[in-house]
Image 1: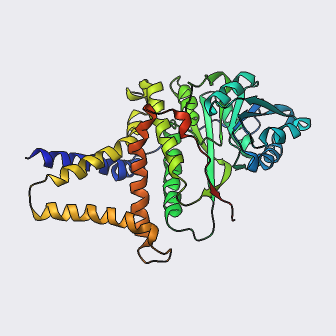
Image 2: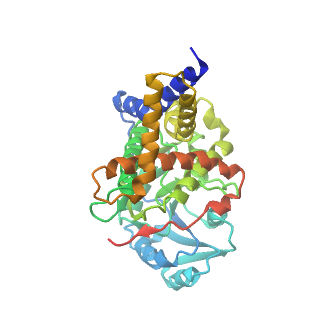
Image 3: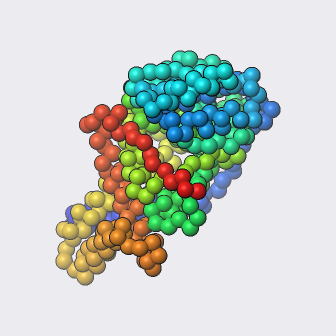
Amino acid sequence: MEMSILIFLGSLVLAGYFLAGYPLWLRLIPLRPLRVLKDENHVPAVTVLMAVHNGAEFLETKLENLLALSYPKDQVRIVVISDGSTDGSDEIARAFAPRGVELITLPRGGKAAALNAGLRHASGDVIFFCDVRQRIDAEALRQLAANFADPRVGAVTGELRILKPDGAVGEQADMDLYWRYELWVRARHSALWSLFNTTGCLYAMRRELCSALPPYTLGDDAVLPLGAYLRGFRIVFDPTAVAYDYATQSGTDWKRRMRTLSGMWQTYRIYPRLLLPHRMWLHFFSHKLGRLLLPWTLLAAVIASVFLPNSVWKWAILAAEAAIFVAAAIDPALPRRFPLKRLTSLCRTFLVMNLAALLSIKVFFVSPLSMWGTTKVDRTR
C-alpha cells in the first residue's frame, strides 16, 4: 500500500477518534460516579483574588456582585490586583476600601505576575479566583467551598453560562454547542476522578496547594489546578456553582482561543509528567492533548489526499475537502437566514478553531504577554 494511503487513513482514523470515537466511548463506558463528600456547612476562610487590567467598564458592578455573595462576611477577603491599569480601575477599587476591598497595584506584568502578588498577600484556607467581567451567582462561593469538606478535593470549578441575544445563530451558536459538550465532558471526568483544568473566572483551590505561577503563564486555570492533581488531589466540577458571561462578539473570539490553546502548550512544558502514565492519562490524551493534535492530523490527511493514487475516490475526497473550505470562506458573506447558514457556519467555526490550534505554537516564539487582549462581548441583552 502506498505511503500516501497509509498516512491518509492513519490520520483520518486518529482525527475520527478525537472527534467522535472518544466522545462515544466516554458516553458508553460504565460509570460509577465517585462521590464528593460535600458539606454546605463547611465555610472555610476564603481570599478572593481578582487580577484586573483596565477593567473599569465592569469593576464596580463586579465588586458589588462579590460583596453580595451569600458567604459569611467575616470569612471572606476580597483582593483586587491591578496589573498596570490606566483607565480608572484603581480609583474604583479604592472607593470600595471602606467596605473591605483591598487593592494591590503593580506595573504591567501580565496575569501570572498579578496572581503571584495576590497569592503572597492571601490568607485563609481557600483561594477563590475570578475575573472582572462575569457575574457570579450569590450561592456560588458557598457551593464551591462546600466541596473542600472532602480532603481529596484540591480544586473545584463551576458552570459558566453564556448570556446571548435570543435566537443566536452562526459562529456563536456553534461555540455554544462546543461549550455544552465541554461541560458534559467535565461532568464525566469529575465523576471518574478529576478534570484537567477549570473555568478561569470561577474556580477555587486549597491555599497550600497554590504554587507561584511561572512568568507569563497564560493558563493559570490549568497550571494551578494541575499542580494539585499531580500531587494526588481531585479537580472536581460542581454545576451548582454558577457564573454568567456575555457572548463574545462575532469574530472577536480568535485571540481568546489562541491564548487558551497556547496556554495548553505552556502547561505541558511546565508539567511534562502529564505526558507519562497517570490515573486519567487516556482521558487526558483523548480530550486535552487531542485538541492540540487534531489539526495536525487533519493537515496530514489533507496533504496526503493530494498524493493519493488517481481514482474516483481521490477526486471525491478532494471535492469534499474543497467544499468544506469554500463553505467556510463564503460564510461571513451569507445572510443570517440563508438556508445553509448553519452548515457553512459550522464549517467556518471548525476550521477557525483548528487553525487557532495550529498557530498556537507561536507561544514558543513570541512573548506570551503579547497574546493578552480584551475580549469584546455582546451586552445588548
